[in-house]
Length: 208
Image (cartoon, rainbow, N blue to C red; front, side, top):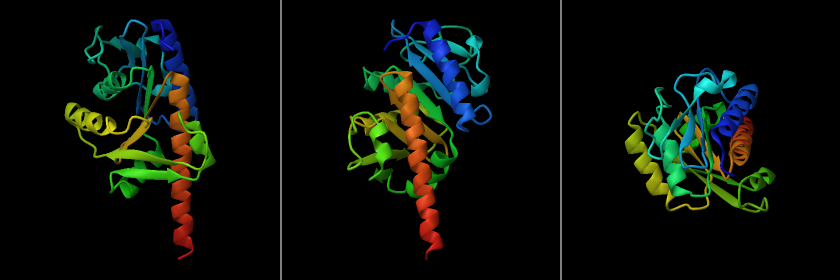
């Protein structure tokens, strides 16, 4: 589904409110975007609280992330635009600094990925039809050099065509989909599964 600018603004604003209510949009963290029908990208501007977004808090950039209006887009715009270039079907990308993704990526991401398997919730991810599957979520080192990080992410994702999310150590999660609704489902399912992994670790520690 491709959006008009008005549709993208409305969808992004509504998602910001829902993610904030779910505890997935603390302070001014995160950034959200949608691909428009003409190929431009609507993306949240830098430094806005995602639970209080309005039309002025969503701006337009071109496919390379260059601003098309006099506002400053998210510092991580390049991490959004690379996903649109890699996946032609994707029209929605969400990034959150959730507690589970931020914490678990630091402690279980030493091998460059977190493996999720056996969970019913895996069926919330695009392409998964059974809990009897394994989902490998890539984990990348954090960096303030976003263009270099984007190159690293792109190289890895080219090897994983079916993936719909990744983590950045100590930073958070990216999730995407054929529309913003699917991207939101990916983010919510991923957060649920990471919380399950944290609880499993806690229980295992309590029983040792």
